[in-house]
Image 1 (tube, rainbow, N blue to C red):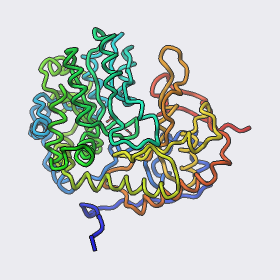
Image 2 (cartoon, rainbow, N blue to C red; image 1 turned 90 degrees about the vertical axis):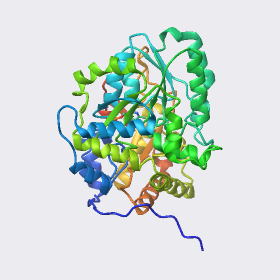
Image 3 (cartoon, rainbow, N blue to C red; image 1 turned 120 degrees about the vertical axis):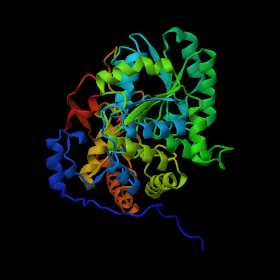
Image 4 (spheres, rainbow, N blue to C red; image 1 turned 180 degrees about the vertical axis):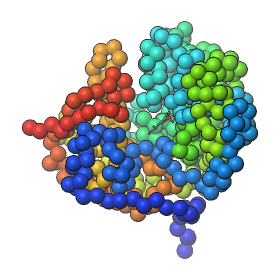
Length: 459
Ligand code: F0G
């Protein structure tokens, strides 16, 4: 008999978690204005709000923490980190930052000007925020197939080369760079193929434009290339990673995802002009160039995390857990963005809460219902997160309306996945009785989902 699959690690330290009653949760979510970001973590049983900064570090990473060099300038921890990044990506210039959006802020301060257009595949909300906040446009060129949640294709995160080429043909003078997000978080943690990265490079070269990778989940992307794309089955993850980055001019990185640290990020590039242009902003916003908002110990853990999570076994354990949850949802007929993504399952709320009109935010309503059901905190990646159109100020209902269940790395077991699946099934079974959603009481002009205040609509 073939041995079953099991995790490529064992557990050395645990953290107790606590269940609550439905009455408690009803009170807490009301106090949180029906926005799960406003809940206290202790009011949550299984926390799937994000896979960012919530992973469990390895014993090697913790050992690295003890060896951190906390020198203000020239710390050995920085040089270890830089060496690892250069080894994996080929990028020679490295600017550390405290997290991914800080890398965006530093680099975009140099690259993005008012009136610019930055084409890419479903810019993440902070990326979009850093572009729109500079009165520029984040132009989404994701393939149309990504919008059909039930369509099963291997690289649903891809850039549509036709849309990209059109953008360049029409607005080349306004485009400072092209951004490719790997994996494509907003479209459902969906990967981008090597073939597609090559196509983007070819279009960029034609118009002499640089390419930036938003690389938060680049290792998971490499896993999908290895397991889904012809010709890569026998390559190592590290070989694939190198081939991916050979097609870019630089990267911004939220190390809180695929480097499995609780805090950290960086910019890396092969372009001296980007480095020279951005480094002053690092000093201004983040810190001196050899720490950029991080402790020495954190840079050590980050370097080790990058090394460990570009190994196949670690990625296989992780992505098989996401697939396990997907299989359980399949048993119950619960629709989600197919196939399962690398870091999360994106439940298709508009296909479940069909009685809740889009103006009443179905995915947010489902997020609240799942919390009430079992204390599980997912997060809305939908109409609230989409913000208003910067020009018309209308809600943007053009995209998908999803409940994201993001799985932290090396944190929960498949027993937790079972609880999540059954809790969602219970909500799914009573979906016909859910007729009203939520309305906005207060919202911020940008990135409103973090602080929005909502109330349930009672009719
Ligand atoms: N890019 C992508 C693709 C991301 O998913 C994120 C963060 C960032 C950039 C920004 O990085 O948080 O370190 O500043 N995503 C988290 C999430 C918050 O929950 O998906 P950060």
